[in-house]
Length: 208
Image (cartoon, rainbow, N blue to C red; front, side, top):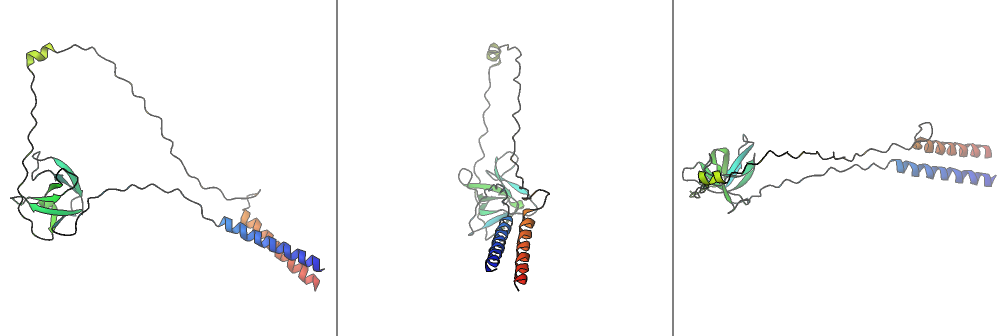
C-alpha cells in the first residue's frame, strides 16, 4: 500500500511540474519586427546672444546668401516652423537678419526679418555681401556656326525596361500549438494535472 501511494505521489508531482513548464512556454511573448528609424539632422544653436525663431504662422522660410530676394541672392537653405538659430546682425534697412548657418561657405546667411522673431538683445547693422556676378553667356559667330551644323538622321530612342518589383518581407505570427481536434496544448496540460490530483485524492481516501 505504501509503494502504491508513493507511486501516485511521484506521478502527480511529475504531471504538475510538466504542466507548469508548458504554461511557462506558452506565456512567452512573441517577438515583433522592429521598424527602422531615420534620424533627421537639425541645425544646432547656441543658447547665448540674440536668437531668431521662425514664426508659428510660417511652415518654412527660405535662407538666402544675402539680404535680398527676387533672384538678387540665391537660396542656400530653409528653416522650419519654430526652429531657432543664432542671429548676428541686421541689414542697413532692417528688413533682413544675418544668422549663423554652418552648412554654407562662410557659415552665415540671411532671412527675412518679418518672418522671424528676435530675442536676446539688439542686433548691430551689418553690411551686406556683394551681389553675385552674373554669368557671361558666350556668343558664337552665326557664320561659323552654320559651317559646323551636321545633319544627323533620326535615331531610335532606347527602350526602358522597368526593374523587377521588390519583394518586401512579411512577418506572420506563428499559430498556437494544438493537438488533433483543435484543442490548445495548454488545456491538455492542465487537464492532465487535474486528473493526477484527482487520482491522488481517491487513493488517499481509499487508504483510510
